[in-house]
Image 1 (cartoon, rainbow, N blue to C red):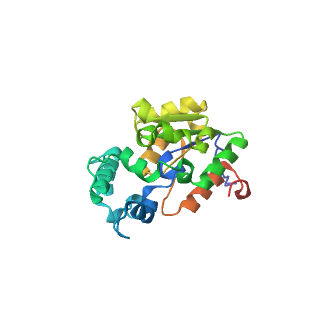
Image 2 (tube, helix red, strand yellow):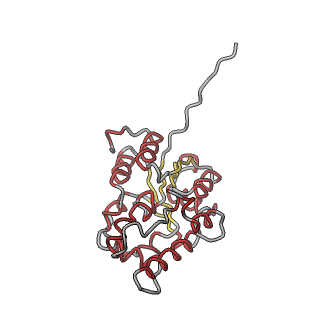
Image 3 (cartoon, rainbow, N blue to C red):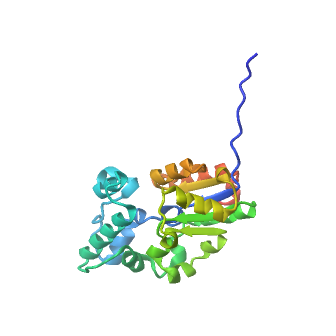
Length: 230
């Protein structure tokens, strides 16, 4: 007699998050605010990265690995500075001009609450970022409350190892002090998610076209009820 059995997925013991677009709101979501801050016409900014890749040739070039993520943002920063008559903008310049006064405002509140709930439930928490301090600078980050909720921060600003290099995930696993198979890794870029999967982690894609659904999916994977974080 054949009996179908369902295998229960392994419950994560650690949550590992990308920073940009996962913990923080992305610039792609903030174009109208950016236009107001810089005095640009409404609708002037049309590039939307993963939200609308067909309308963003530069993003598609990055996905084809013709340019890197850092180069993508360097080019967008240069373009944005030129739009208001300023030359020499870098990604750090762009973020400083648009976000530097309010560190906590750029953090997704539901993600912050979810991280607190995860820690309260005994999970280890970590960040794996390609350019956290490089883009934001230590002074800005020192005022960001959510960063105090993480057990480990692995930042390529200091390691020099960018996702999806396997060594980046290995460093994060070591910092979290658990097995790779016990880590749920969340990132908004498919290639980084694939890198986490190849490293033996559990993975969850963070879809910027459905942020609430993505956050709910992470909570469900962790076994955290909505009332604890929403």
